[in-house]
Image 1 (cartoon, rainbow, N blue to C red):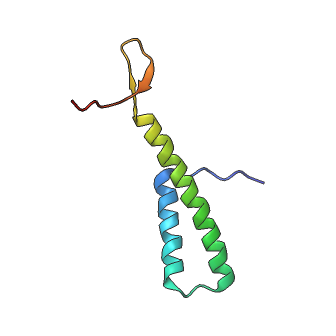
Image 2 (cartoon, one colour; image 1 turned 90 degrees about the horizontal axis):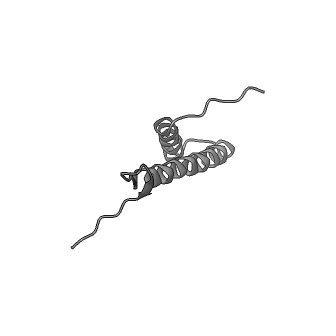
Image 3 (tube, rainbow, N blue to C red; image 1 turned 90 degrees about the vertical axis):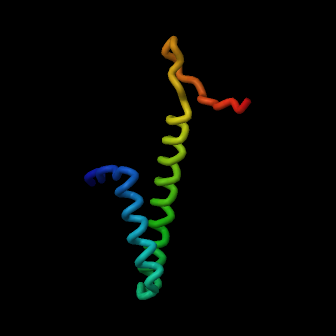
Length: 76
């Protein structure tokens, strides 16, 4: 069994949007709707995980000694 290529965030989001549009249309047989819903939920989780990872990455700052630390803005 060949391993499928992992899609990037944008590709996953586009596929998710297509599934949602199909489901909102209402012209999908019940069995197909259930499959599309399950696939959409998996894609939503993948997208959410990728967003959380990106957020964790961009909230870090490199210190002068080369270490990564959480970036915080102090309001004075």
